Amino acid sequence: MIIRTGSQKTALIVFAHQTPASFNATARDVAVQELSDQGYRVLVSDLYAMKFRAEATRDDIKGELKNPELFQYGDETMFAWMENQLSEDITAEQQKVTEAELIIFQVREDKPHLQLWLLSVSLWLFCASLWSLFAPSPSSPWSDSPSTAWRCVWAHCPVGK
Image (tube, rainbow, N blue to C red; front, side):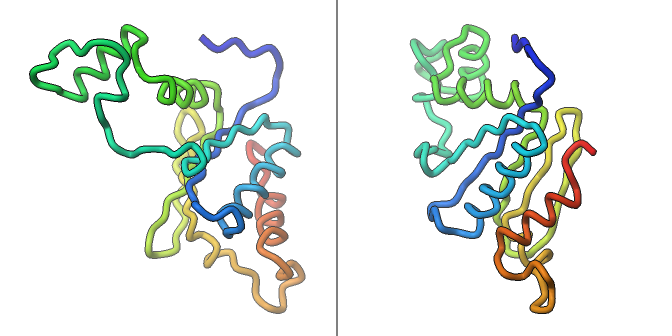
């Protein structure tokens, strides 16, 4: 159970890019700064830095399996969750999701588009290829850098306002 001691909201950014100097990293940094300026406590899950594995394996479960002869991932993880036997990396990320009022995911796709899914937990689906939609024109007063452009995008649309 999460007990909030103040009115500060929490945002979680799920970041996935292998290059620290990438546009995605700049967009993440701007989002962290702007959300912080708006009063959010910002958590970042950097999947590359965490050496995140996308495979669903037996390693996700601590202790003995219920049916070791026929490993059924869905069943075994349900039992492990009920008995508090999921691996520490999974429970740490579950804790972040539980604490967050706002979750921002990056999605890498071939076509630039923006998808925002506003759900009961304020889940936003953030597309890493969004830049081509918001790229400033050469005559734009804020075209000097991607980070300045992103600050303008966030500043004009404060989260929760």
